[in-house]
Image (cartoon, rainbow, N blue to C red; front, side, top):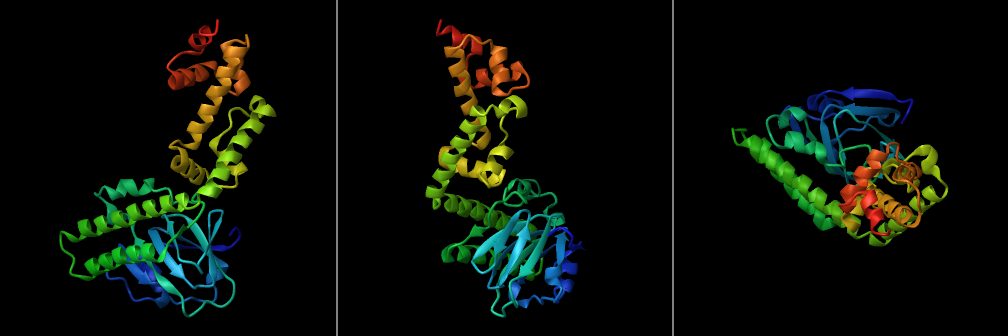
Amino acid sequence: MPGKKIIHVKSITEFHRSRGLEAPQHPLISIVNYADIQLSADTADVNWVCDFYSIAVKRNLNAKLHYGQQEYDFDEGVMFFIAPGQVYGVSFEGAATWERSGWILLLHPDFLWNTSLGTSIKGYEYFGYAANEALHLSEKEEATMKGIIDNIRQEYHNNMDRFSQNIIIAQIETLLFYADRFYQRQFITRKISSHKILSRFEIILNEYFSSCKQMNSGLPSVQYIAGSLNVSPNYLSGLLKSLTGETTQQHIHNYLIEKAKERLSATTLSVSEIAYELGFEHPQSFSKLFKLKTDVSPLEFRAKFN
């Protein structure tokens, strides 16, 4: 993506115009059939950034979406999410197919003003560069999403009244809830690979401390662990939460506490020395975490063994 010209699309109306579509019926929300979009020859030579949300399912485009550090293949039934202000590009692996299909929900943040979704939408992790993968949908799941999209389209194609915004917002929230459910299903159906990641996670932590990296680099970060596993931090935490009920940070803390217990019970090192040995910059931070996790201070724990 670097080095390409960036085209900034500021409104949904401008998006429609740039794709050869009729003007949207509502300036802040639109649903587009992907088969209706006109693809220009220079589409693959630029990157795009839009001032609105995009939720889409696209098929048979013979192209890949470049978004953050990931590539999404449009040949499969995948669903992906782009937030305002994020850069993406499309590369074609040949001519775009005429059998392409799917839909795009375009949603301007202004449509969410004074609604609960205006705040909560930022909490969905799949709206971000850190999302490690698109959502792969079964036919039944895709039909569920399509049904919600049809309901939204029907509502804003009717004469908008004072109920319309709330009805549409409720439908969008339902769609996002289903996306959360389907992502969890995606984690569960990949349990074998997930458990392999969990095993590698433990190996990476063991290697980090056995090589004394913490002495120079400090405590292992979530970013470091995720990078060593070639997954995004959000993906790793979501996967671990699904498998164990705890996030990556919680797993790191648990590991540190076990190492600390070992040093407290089997050595005469001071609490400060153990804290520095584990990679803590301040002994107080170590003592606070230990007390939080065990309900006793490091010295109280050590006293049990004397």
